[in-house]
Amino acid sequence: MTKRAWWLVALNFLVPGSAQVVAGNRRLGRFGLGTTILLWALVAVAVVLALVARGFALSLITNSVVLGLLVALAVFYAVVWAILTLDTLRLVRFVNVAPGARGLVAALGIVSLVLTVGGSGFVAANSVSAIGLLNIFAPGPSQDPIDGRYNILLLGGDAGPDRLGLRPDSISVVSIEAATGAAVIFGIPRNMQNVPFADGSPLWGPFPNGYDCGEECLVSYLYTYGVEHPELYPDAVDNGSDPGIEAMRDAVEGITGLQIPNYVLIDMQGFAQLIDALGGVEIDVAERVPLGINGGEIVGYIEAGSQRMDGATALWYARSRYDTTDYDRMERQRQVQEALLRQMDPANVLLSFQGVSAAGQQVVKTDIPQSMLSYFVELGAKTKDLPLTKIDFVPPLVEEEANPDFDLIRSTVDDALVPYTPPTETPAG
Image 1 (tube, rainbow, N blue to C red):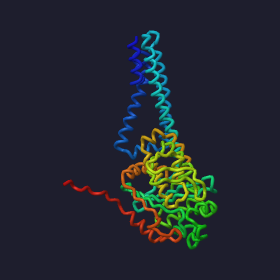
Image 2 (image 1 turned 120 degrees about the vertical axis):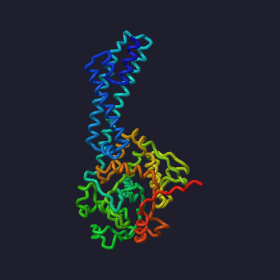
Image 3 (image 1 turned 180 degrees about the vertical axis):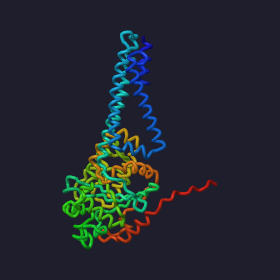
Image 4 (image 1 turned 90 degrees about the vertical axis):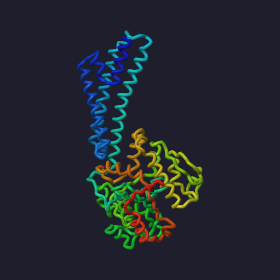
């Protein structure tokens, strides 16, 4: 009976339903075996799709309907496996098992129950979180690249307690080549003045000569101006944006000469939650950074060298204004962004997915269509394997933030967006 107990528990763990076929209710056993074989078939299909049709597989797992079915399937298997495991423990008949083996047999049964039901719960919980994360993205059809590239406006919004409303402290454009995934990031100082607007922008009405009212008209202030004048962009909200973002988009298009169909707004105040969800970030600090604002008190330091930063520390590192320039802050913000991207490898995201999803829903806003998410995930995997070109429009490239050379900026953009050519290998010898 002791050997029988070990076999039954082991069979239930390896092939759920087989224990019932051997020694119990065969009708229940056949049902359990059928569901087990069906699961193996589904897993095999998923593996094949991941290997030979990765794009299609990604489109499935980024579809809310498919994720909803996955939740239902995970709950179904959790119930089935719980019933089969408890019935197997009944079939064991512990009173007939050797006293020394009873605890071990029971422990194996409990481990089997925890792994199967717990695994199903993990899949269901992560699928629910993924459905919530998908709601960040906009409805609508896929978009074609413009001149072979996808251009996305990246705004780092800073809605801290020391300021009214949100103001984009970090302004960048990422341009990704559709064919290869090669990417270029253009950084725009938030203090840039006298900026022009895209052709046809409603901002030409109140500012016919560009945003030219001196220090009261920094490019980052256009977000606030747009929010305060929603009549300029009456359709913005219906299109998954808002008037502040549209004003920033018109300005950045005017500065760079690029068409920018999509944006991503990251709330820097909530950025710390995302970093904590991923377990922190590794940043190589070039020199000691005092934490504070100009004219205020120093509340601490981040020492030079390789530092493992939690969310709060990384946010301080990116935002600190004490005895520093905006150009220094731009560089630190870029370091934090790149460190975060390095942390977002598939294994780390999967293990921390519920926290990442919860943080992402609070941190990120975008008008990228949900239908393009799987494509961008696949394209992003290519991007991570290629060198990233970074161009900031700051001195010495652009000397004056009060009166920038926009012709130089646009020609620099044009020169940078050439098709990527893989380096050729030099023959040995």
